[in-house]
Image 1 (cartoon, rainbow, N blue to C red):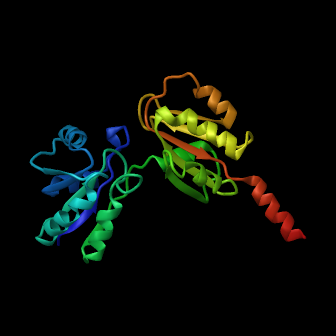
Image 2: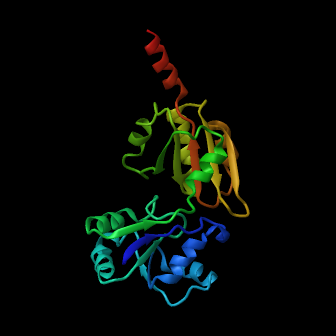
Image 3: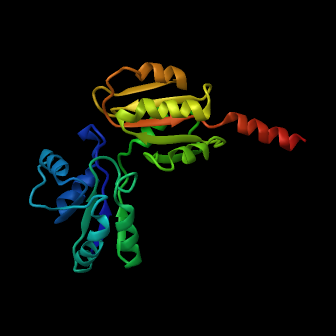
Length: 236
């Protein structure tokens, strides 16, 4: 039966790909790829050949929906991959999954690599309940989003690019306060993986004036003062 299969790919270490992911990529004829050049390197590494790679990224995903849906309805099973990690998690994927479901097309999502879970666990911050914020708006709405999280009690997880890391941490310091604990993870699963944890000011000092490479995950402790305020109100 034709369907869409969402296939996670390694975030760094190629050994993290699953046997099931390789099985799917070997079995389908068509693969939707965020960047066909990056995906070609992955497929070549695992000796997967003869596949039709179709670019499916944030700049064309709206236009490509009908074409993909028609191909699946014609009998094709199509795999969706991103450059790294699980599609639809801060990457293209949501729109095509929703469109498939609206057309009664089966969607199968394989478990696999994603950066937020290792970073959350490595942080040592409470992980029984957390909120995933992904990438903050780069300009418009950024301050509004951050201010809306001031009283968030649960651990927060953000994605960020290396060149904006210090700027973002500085904004966290201004809005969340100097006593908030954060953890920064970069190059997860790679040779130079780094996880640095501390109060925001200390983490800024660590990364300031330092060449920062790799994708970044920032984990921020929740507002414990908000929890204490709630307790005091209940006692009254």
